Image (tube, rainbow, N blue to C red; front, top):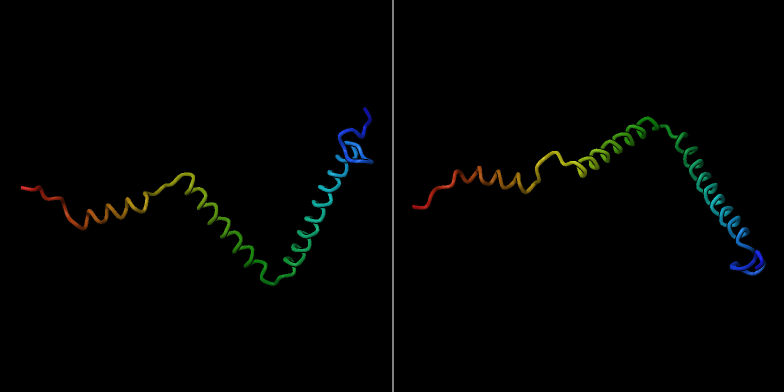
Length: 96
C-alpha cells in the first residue's frame, strides 16, 4: 500500500489533513482581520460611552430573559387573567 491510497491523485492523507488545517487557519485569520477592522472603526466613534451603556443594558435584558425562561419566577399570564376574572365576578353562588 502506498501513502496515496484513499486520497486523490498526487496527494496523501497527510497532505489532505495539512491542506484542511491550512484552510481552517486561513478562515480564522480572515475572521480576525474583520473583527480588528470593526474594532478600529468602533474606537473612532464619539459616542463610545453611550454605545457601551446600550450594549450593557441589552446584555442584561437578554440575560434576564434567559433566566426567566430557565426558571420562571412569576405565574403565567393566563393564570393571572383567570384569577382577576374570578375576583371581578364575585364569589360563586350555590344553585338552589
